[in-house]
Image 1 (cartoon, rainbow, N blue to C red):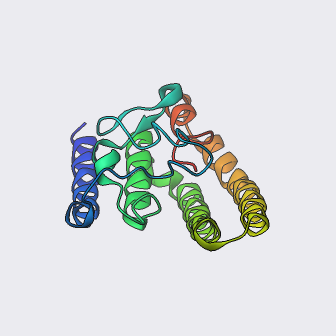
Image 2 (cartoon, one colour):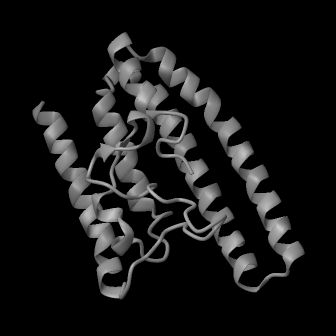
Image 3 (tube, one colour):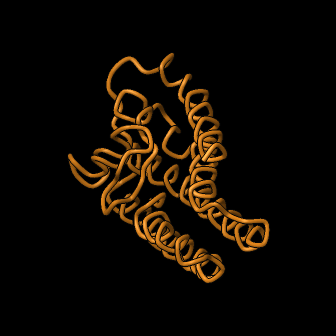
Length: 183
């Protein structure tokens, strides 16, 4: 239990440090991905209490990522993603024997994060200055990139899941796959 508390404290501190620039730059309310597909798209994705419950009993680390904290780049920030991985690893109580499959999963998760951050930049560029056709092309490219990154994450997730105990699998069902930590 002390290890979990220590890890949660580390995650909280990482989030606080990562969010500090948003306080300095953010004058109004940020909205994350709001407006991408409609006025409420992304609503609830980054809101709630620190380590609160997301949709489908999916824990979310979002107290400091609420509307006022979403500065530019915050949604795709490397520290936030690393904090998410640290939280998952801690909550699953990954053992030394599971470290190889955990590291493979974490590497695939990082690659997916990088691909999605790049895709987001491309979509924002098209949204802010592209024609209707360029915006559609950007969305198609983004959808294909998302599918490819999910496929690349599948095997490491399978391998990690198969290495977990029954108790860990119960936690993993809420933490891995689906929408939890995914874009």
